[in-house]
Length: 311
Image (spheres, rainbow, N blue to C red):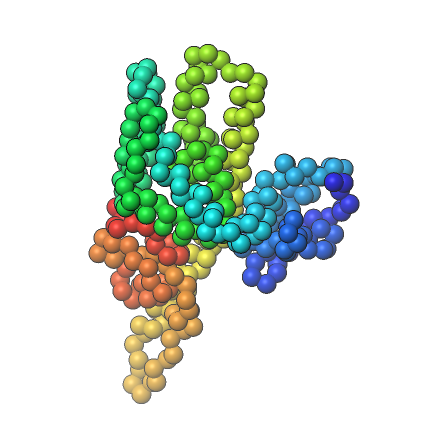
């Protein structure tokens, strides 16, 4: 496909941000208008289109592909995408260890066991580890916990999580990447422990190198996609926190004699869920104002993720 436009730019539209090509709204392959919640993400997508030369090469626009997939596929086939992603927990890469050589066994344990321990603490999901290739069933409780984590993502983050999981071969690694426990380079490295060990022993051919390069690029793009989305979430979190503080301060002002009670600010009645820490447990509050009224420690905007306690 040839490039026929000259200018690209992010543009505000109802409910978020889009991208304009010569002033006309960009549309997905299914002809939906491209809409994302973050200006930073819209700017990055516009930059992908601006970087195209005479021929448009979709393979060089991973952020565009992820956004379009979220709109055209995930939004329509959400249950299928959730199921495809969550099923990795049943046979997750980090649960299958080599029986030998000892050096590989030790490396797998050093790289993968901390992630298994992390998901246990983070999601209350205990994963069984086995040696060899024969499958070992995971507990229904663990699978249910992972399915709930996946289903809790919005369409855009679910699309990125699906891409991360497929590229890593592991839902555990993908969740660690999405939550910032690993960066993209570390996630790629820990997902390639077996392959790297073999390369160190026998070398790497061009086909394997190209495949690894493509996987690393997919992981990096999905990670960047989430980071650009999280910029919007963090700003909402800061705004919710500022509004909650202001609302609480106003509502607690002492009344002068004969002064009528002032109405609670609108921010204190808005539905803007936040996660806060109360008595060692995470709780979802209607908004930051109510969390502060309950003397809870504000953690982040949005519903609490799956976890019994914060520690």
